[in-house]
Length: 258
Image (cartoon, rainbow, N blue to C red):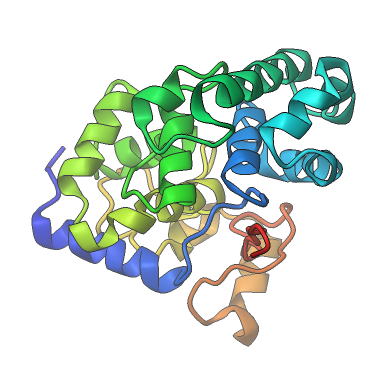
């Protein structure tokens, strides 16, 4: 597979950034702590599912001390709709205790410190560093792993190899938003079973040989895309999931009040 040139990589990101001008996580949160909790809960779960479970939890506990006061059983009950909820509730209580005892109740802006917290690995640490603290980190989940390999942008056998490849090929001006552009592209366009190549903004740059064609797409989707309303560039809106490469809603990250 031919490697991306510097110019091709820059054009790749330019197009993704143009299609989604505001790169944001789809997880809803209030502050760095609630972001950390949301990312821990999102492991092997969807952001949509996490966002349904966390508003009530965060209304009661938006700090480590408040979360610890709730206790493991209460937290588990509030997130029971999320997969592996008991293990995740246990980790949330444990990391809340560690944040209080070792970091003065605040989320550390340090990868090594973050990775010592229960339930927090490299991917979670990268998300927190990027979203909460504005670090140009690239967290590689299943979507980004797929996009990196399928497109040829940053092929690798492990998430770390893909992350390191993305670090090398991603232009500096796009590193801050790279994680969001790539994950949203993988989630809604470059999907696992059948990528929506006919509407992909980087299809001509992509190295994937088995690209789908309009003839392979559902007739309902083809008709919808033929309408004038969908002729413009990709945008994020509250689209449904049943029509292939649906536009996605603009994520709303709830920030802590000043």
